[in-house]
Image 1 (tube, rainbow, N blue to C red):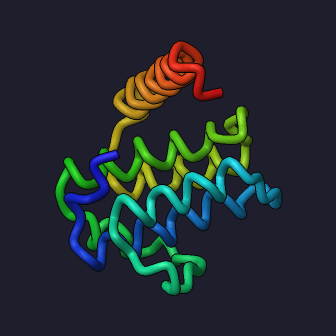
Image 2: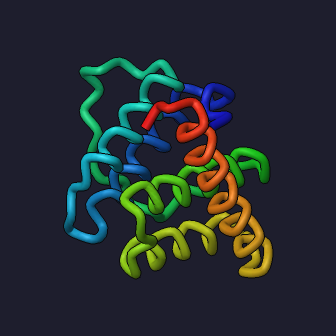
Length: 132
């Protein structure tokens, strides 16, 4: 969601952050892997781009403005809920990113709540369209 607005450097960093979230709980869920591929397609990153771990120090420099930081957080929250549960390891990792991005707990809480509601609406829409 809104990932196509990123620069090439931001696109690659976003995929790497998503990879960090996926592996943080030690479980590779097919829904999370599918969402990672969806991110890749939305951003136009080549299928042969090797996604690897991204160290968090300095990540705020890759996403210097508030808008890009909010896009990262929304998409990472969405990814975290892809398997049906926001695991504690995922929450801790995203909280570290939130702090690096200088986003308050209250603002992040609103963002997370909005993301959960969005995902519920998407699921409802898929059911209405008989896509599930």
